[in-house]
Image (cartoon, rainbow over all chains, first blue to last red; front, side, top):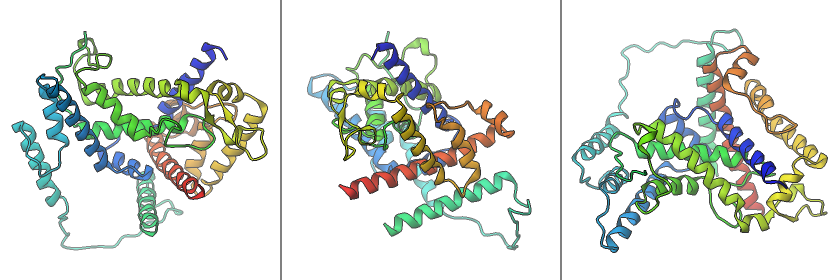
Length: 150
Length: 213
């Protein structure tokens, strides 16, 4: 096995990952969360792990008598539990807004008049976008049922 | 010069980490191991571990090898993501190259032994990927995987061209859009759905493997 062949192999793996993966800069936060949930990853646990890492790094600096960089405090603030106070005022406000949004986003205004409309995929009533959305919702529902039955 | 005076006030690090983890999943999934394993044997590193470790390296004031250089321009979520993806790939490859992994990896489906279990080195593995036997196994695995998409023709069509039987050839979004006569946006949409299904299949396969042990 030559070094060149090994490098070629790894380059192919990298290129494939790049092509198989959706464009990570354009997909929405909720889509990222959904994909991670499909993989069995808990987004909350990722946040907690990053928070733990930042705490360890800051502690290691302090134990050596160094001042921990300010950005580490920001990372701790950003990734801390919602009820943990943040030292950076800007982050504190953002966290508070996020926390409040958690209450508001669950309230959905009910329309005054509800009408039922039907559209059938086979007769071409559905646009491709709507069909894709329905497929995604179906997948999500199946996944939730599957997880609940595990 | 590496700048460790970072500022993340404009970047949602949680979101960044999630996107990086997703990329790590794609990378682990594309490494042609016979059965996808989210945990690398002998290293215990999962896609999540690798993503967290990569971001931690950037944050670590003592790690001078991973830092944001002024030449990279302004640090935005997307520019930082691109940078961390490159770091993650290097670390992933380094892990695969490590002596422990090189000297003892487990490749049940590429083995000649009766019970399908034999230890190979990474170099053995790479060399054997081009053997007729390995190609036949890959074709069989490809057909098995494609059969799981029989009820989703759009995804099956996409996966069929992404999984070239002779290797690991894949197309760019633009090439795929021309091939299927649809827009690049629709290709992206299908890719998201496909990845969602593949990740679920990987999780199920992992669950079955754990049950079998």
